[in-house]
Image (cartoon, rainbow, N blue to C red):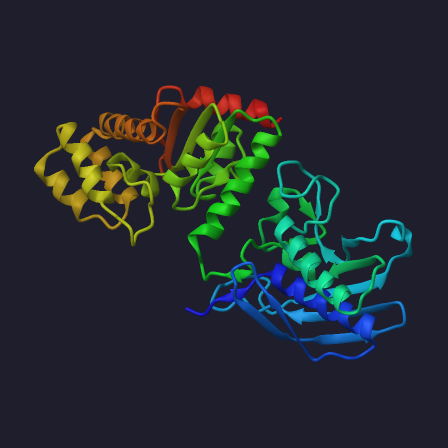
Length: 371
């Protein structure tokens, strides 16, 4: 699959090009930078506006084969002379229109700063400094980043959940976009967990997604949207929560995902493992299910269909007790018993199916922390 380049790479390229045009007075059509990954990025320059004290231009984001919402966005940089810092020359980096502002702690940048992460800032400084040295310029420059339409784009990202308002983030650690990379998802999960800890939370509520949002709100007065979304990476998220020092972890989710955890499956993507019906059937065996019920479970196309067969035989409660016991065992095993782990499993058609012993107590604690 084709790799792409991060918003950080685009910002650094645009900043370098604008700095070159400002200090040389010459127009540029292309620019090259070195990414932290060691890969050279060459890009065309768009929307060039040259003035005596400021030059602005843009670089078009190319995310390769990654379905990035910022793919095709114009990442712009305006570089201007900055006489306010004449005594101690510096390269000042600020955010303009379409660049988000950090409003909550726990992120790469402090509250109040533009959401331009540390690595992109260093990339911009490196590339602009190279141009300044080329022209022996010893003054200060301001680099203002902007993204036309960035505020609307940000609504399709995690930024609203993270407390980044007004636009997108300029991110990236290598300068390269790996298509649908696991690392990108885990980086997002780490950010959300880090933010929770920075806000003083001891309990991390994690969920594969918002499936069951209405149920959790109506039955337990809990907004599942506040949970950290772990996608299929349950085991990795447990590892991160333990690493970041959480005291308690509550896993909430639909039986279709979490039944897999009862078999020790910590990546619940279907291409990694399924075994949903086999695990339900194994729990049903422990509950005395008939041969006919087991056959029907194994032939089911969904866990909710299979659960209906358990209900018909009247063994759904004992079966889910067996499931929850195994889930509890594997969660505790993953964190080496060093973090308290609890779990709630539900289904849209049937509501709460099972919970480990301290799950509801932990949910109450999480709600109190989030108030």
